[in-house]
Length: 131
View 1 (cartoon, rainbow, N blue to C red):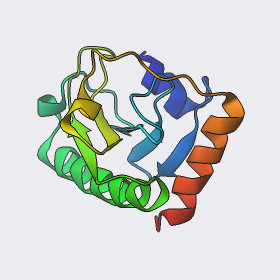
View 2: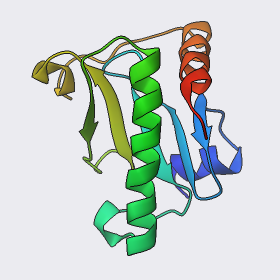
View 3: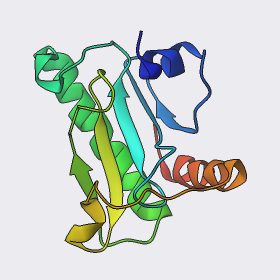
């Protein structure tokens, strides 16, 4: 069972920003930027391109909705999208507020926020979502 499946089941807490029957979005706790969110299918599948077509398309549409909420909540030019898939063997999409291409550089040092700051950011995003 992956760490993401443990978040889905409630075994591990997370700063959730959106949830449907099939998908979950929560803040990355080692973010590249404030508002860096991970969108996942609740079904545990390692590689994003191994998702069945319905789940794959659903995840992309869910990520699009979440990205719109992030963009309203966090000042930025765009929401960058990255699928790397090596850190956790559970399909996920990174949604990262960005103002320049370098904001998506995963070799940069990760940021650190307090639990209170993370909860405040999650709440700002939740307020903008219409899920």
